[in-house]
Image (cartoon, rainbow, N blue to C red):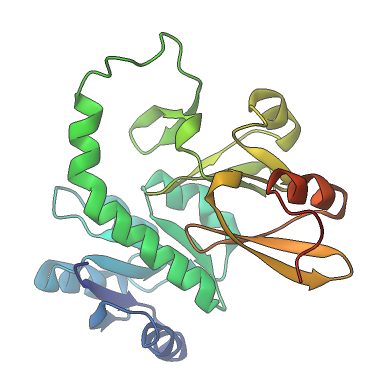
Length: 254
């Protein structure tokens, strides 16, 4: 697997040091530089050509959102926003960010974001070629959700969605290569989705059970599911029995 060249951008020195420390425990990455302002970030991106930019949103001179929006062309790096403000999430995914992390950054979420960026980069050309090819055996009416992106809307096949989490008035639709933010209620989603594909495991989450790689015991009969992309999704108390049965586990794991 190719190494990722990473640029860290934040106007807080402590935040940069924390990110550097966390990245030290992630394999196949190299920190190639840092920046503390939006203009400096643009200069470093142009000079260093990083594969991934960890980008703060609120910065002097130019915001991270503006920096990302002004990046163009085939050499555009993957962007993961790191911020203390959750309200910018819709704007972040409008500029096609790979992920959106809230401070203080947890190691498991950082690793998940890096792996998603790695897959996006590796799969970008292949995905474009596949999208241009005719699908001979595709059904006439493929189930999909129209989601907003920076240049309009795209038709996202439901079969590409690995798991879903609620985000206030929105939901996050997580695929292998990126996440999409979409305005819909969890109740409306439950009516739309085939439970054999995406199963509701919590009032705030749906998952594709075939992508579960592990089950964590939380005590008092509660469990959490480890997903293929590294996410850990807690199962609601009223869903535990049905989820364990669907996974072929007769009882709560030891």
